Amino acid sequence: MDAALAGLLGTTVGAVAGLAGAWLAQRAQTRMQREERAHQEQARWLADKKPLFRDLLVVFRQWCEALLSERASTEDLASLRRSALMWSAEASLIASQSVRLALDEVQATFSAVEAQLRDGRLSLEETGCAARLGNGLSALEDEMRAELKEILRGPRRAEPGERP
Image (cartoon, rainbow, N blue to C red; front, side, top):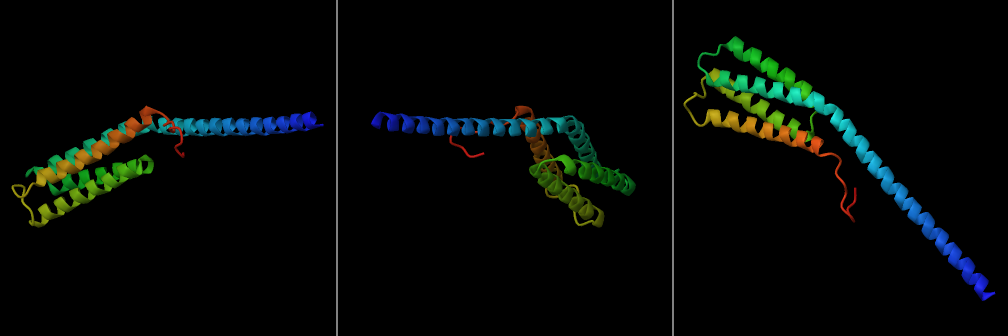
């Protein structure tokens, strides 16, 4: 009788352990598939993001050059500002939060510098106007590059013991 109970208990423990192992394996496989789908979704946007980010940076650089040039007309600046805002709006639809924040900062800096130059509160020779614009563009470009690299890197695998 004791042998039968021990056998029954062993079978039950084995079955529970087998079910738990199968459940854990299924859970891990589901998580990997979810991460892979998320990466594929991001990779689909890569083809859109690269040219969009490039065009956005080109327009901001043109706006920067126009702001720092004494030959730029008010119409030229307005046209470049509209183009930058249009590209910014499009980029903000598919960009990460960090890129959107950097983009907002660049827009605010450029608009503030343009307004100060227009109102005569700031001259091009003064206090690092070019550096302010350049630093903002560099930060934006760094965030864009980081986002594209993250997409190219692929799905991130969780380390053992790390929560997803």
